[in-house]
Length: 361
Image (tube, rainbow, N blue to C red; front, top):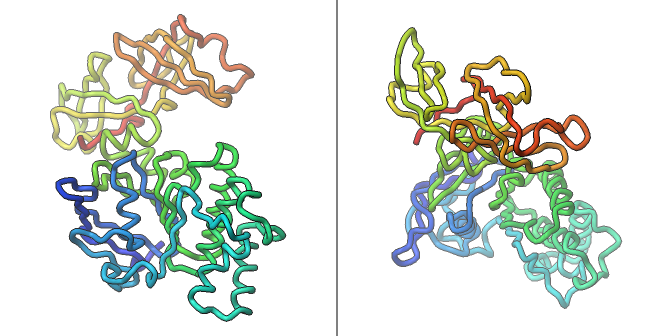
């Protein structure tokens, strides 16, 4: 994804009276990208999407599509389509008519309508269901109809507002794969709004994490997970053990950092960047766990297992180490998990300095 971005937002702000829903957001979204706006409810992500669609007007700032300012362009004249959480299929029209509707009202010739509707239904794998009414469709099929209706108009940009949140887990995972497939097949830029971290990580190639109307970090999924910049991003993307650190010594381009009474380890001075106090994050799977022998690591702790949450392929351990509550993840390589790692037992935790992430706040 290189070259000039297809969609550019420049210092976009939206206020509703005294409430600032979106504040000074600047983003560039490349052509053919699968871009996700991720954040908790009320963070401004849907408002931002609605401004791209034209349903809301920015209080200030510009939204450019291929260099053209979209703000004065009415929604029905933008090369943008939106798929809603509620599907919004017409209940009195069959599948074919639902998909054809947008072409019919704009006066597209009948032969072209028939060809494009057939293509769109094939893309979402709904061939043979053209005469079905919405009440005869499953939730996943309704969502496919909504997608076909959006794709049939060949937009430059497809906006997806929590499109899978009403589906059960298995169907949601299937539709995630379908959306990724569709993006590659049709060559349209997708912009997804979601509060689901797993959904964003598995579907998008670039994610913007939002909180309180601001974009905190924009990166690919791997970078967001492995190298979060802030406490919020570290804790919102997956799970993180967060520590306060204090630099107690500096020597030979390294800083010796004390972690909240848990112990000390060496970090590169370049990571510490001259600061006396730090916030650090460690992902739960980065712990080295051994129920019997202290592992080889930069810092080793004795811990007491408080709870174990079994998740099939992995287990989440909640532990106490020197009065500090910690979280660790272990892969269940044997059936039922490791019988030695159960509540009420002790274990050793090891961590390497290289697995700690120094946060900006």
